[in-house]
Length: 85
Image (cartoon, rainbow, N blue to C red; front, side):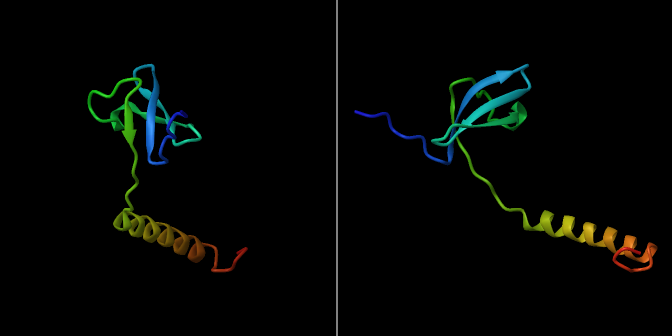
């Protein structure tokens, strides 16, 4: 009987380095992901399995895009508005 495949939304804590960084093996391909240990659930240890998930943050995205557009606009005004101004 073959070993079950790791779901793509799961990771195992492979090791914790310097007490500050955790190396996770993510998904069936066991892609290494290094994260700060403060991002792990309290009490997480080597060998523990975690469910992974990402959540969109549209408010922060809009704020950052707006800030970038403001900077670009200031640069354009400073340089005379031309592409290579």
